[in-house]
Amino acid sequence: MARPPQTTISARAWAELLLLAAIWGGSFLSIRVTLDQVGVLTSVAFRVAGAAVVLWAYVAWRRLPVPRDPRLWAGFLGMGILNNALPFTLITWGEMHIPSGLAAILNGATAIFGVLIAALVFSDERLGPRRAAGVMLGFAGVATAVGLNTLRDFDLTSTAQLAVLAAAFSYGCAAAFARGVLRRLAPGLSPQVTAAGMLTGAALILVPAALATEGAPTLRYDAATWAALAYLAVAASAWAYLLYYRVLAMAGAGNLSLVTLLVSPVAIVLGWAVLGETLPPHALAGFALLAAGMVVLDGRALRRIGRRPLPPAQKS
Image (cartoon, rainbow, N blue to C red; front, side, top):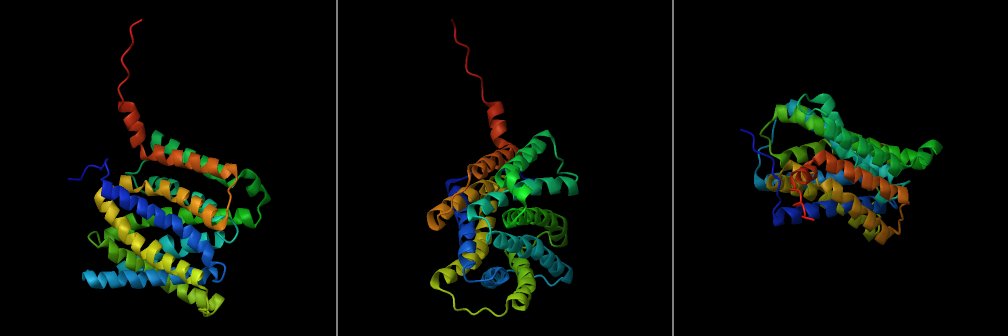
């Protein structure tokens, strides 16, 4: 019998949810810092390879069973491409040309793409009126954040924004791939092993690609760059995945989706405070619309409003 969705979050789950949002929000700042000295592919290769090493160390420490089925390892490779190699590379390249806060806002479209792709692929994920309204609100937010003038000019700025949106689309495809392929091949597999496997698959793609196109890294980076690379690998990838599954177990998938709403404000504030970034009003308005779309997709706030009793009529 399926467990009913969790609607309340404990104080501990809230704390870890906020911590996860802060970690992922900080990744956009760290990406921008690395780009001052490290190439795009090399930066992403450091991130996925370092995170894979940390997660495999965790798997060994916990003595979790490691699968041997070659079909599952092929699934890890596919998941690594869709959930790590492709979106990490697109976001990192995009941040060369747009502010980190704007990249975080556009990355919020992941939730919108995820719902739309699931509705197209799975028969039990139908796009009813409420979810359709949430998707339309979300896309209106994306269009507002991007700005129609930017798309009309179609320069590096607009291409970078489209790259980040393509990353969000890739994340949405990864969610469908995980449900349709990985869960079918190994329904009881530890999520930590899955995370380690997909990051290994991403590293198998990115490390050779980085070496072939950008050459061997010099490693003569300053302290800030090394700190940013370490943050991306250890905190924003390895630790974030471990924390993600802890919050999932404590609060459920519906509550965990709230992290998508919280990442962008963290990234916007950090970009302003550390890098001096300022976003145009239309970008902030776009985030507001995108957030409204996510709230409608979630549905719980609307259900609470619908259940709220009407105030008693006053006698005249």
